[in-house]
Length: 216
Image 1: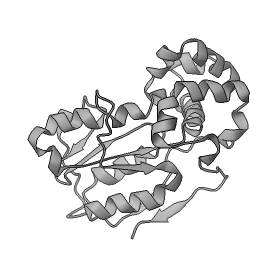
Image 2 (image 1 turned 60 degrees about the horizontal axis):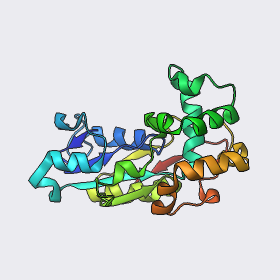
Image 3 (image 1 turned 135 degrees about the horizontal axis):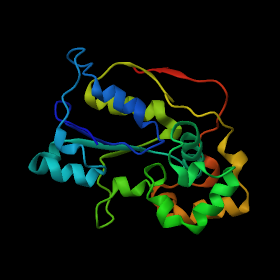
C-alpha cells in the first residue's frame, strides 16, 4: 500500500470500502500543484497500518493513519459481484453459478476464501499482531462523504470527489441473504462485526442512482 510522505499520511486500502476514490485523491497533489504525489516505494509490499508504521519507523508518530470500513454483510456481497464482473480469473469465486452456491463453498473452505484479498477480514488491516487498533481514524463507507471530509480537512485538501468509482451492478445486499448465508458471514467476520460495531441492517441502502459529492 502507498505511503505518502508529503502528506504525512498512511492509508490502508481495504477492498470494497470506497478506497479507490481515496487513493485517487491521495495520489494527486491537489494541495500544492497538479503533479503526482510522491509515494514511498517501501510501502508497496505492505498492506496493513502496522506494517506501514514499521516502515516509517521513528517518524510514525508524525503520520496520520486511516482506513475506511464497511458493513461485513454488505462488503461480502459487493466483493462477490466485483469478482464476477471484473476479476473472473479468481476461479474460486467465479466458478459458482450464484451467490448461494458461493456461500456454501465459502463455508466449506473458509480459510482459503479469506485469503482472497477481496474477502480478507477488515480488522486485519487495522490491528497489529497484538490485536490493538493502529489507525488514527476509522472512516465508514456508510457515511463516506462525511468521513472523507474529515480526512481531507486533516490534509488541507479541497477537491470534488465522485464516489463509487467501481460500483457493481446488483441489488441491495439484504436481498441476497437467508438464515444460512447470514450466519456464514457472521461467523467468518465476527471480529469485524464486534470490533467495528456492525449489525446486519446498518449497511448502506443501495439505490440505482449514483451520487456525486463536493468536498469543501
